[in-house]
Length: 234
Image (tube, rainbow, N blue to C red; front, top):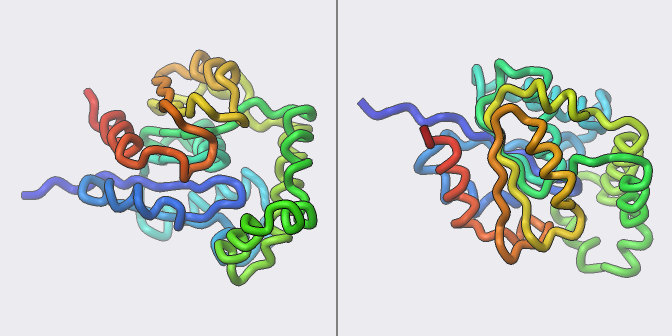
């Protein structure tokens, strides 16, 4: 009898969508029961009355698991998706298996949030980076991409005022976690990643060579290798 594939859920980053995982999901599909989820307001999914924040996105993951009758899942979270995964592992440990994050920013305070919020100006994006504006319009077709950007800025500003995960929270996470970051990531620092890694009871740290922050810059076969290795190692 063939072994049942373990579920693996992909969680995208801020301004992102599940479509960005297409190549990675195809590589891992032979080995896992793959699940792709767009947070509300992303990828054409309508905005939710429940809010546009980490807690609301975590609730959407739980609703997804219930709708698919999944008792638990492994999670690969990119950037903000990794933060949501960690939040879930902290507060709903019975639902979460292994957690793998890539390019997740953990150190949120007013200074770091303020720096990111400055980049999230829809008018500035349209003027200075029109190609990115067109990409966002296509990625979030059905929603106003400018509203997605504005709400993301508000989400980050709120995180800057009150970080949802502190060292004491990470110390309570029982899930095995692998924190991945690129050696050329100019948004996420080695220091904040190593601090979280040191706080987690069961963690691995993986640095991807010649890799910047955008998901598209990551080596897909290498990512697939690490995900498979981490979820199957004894």
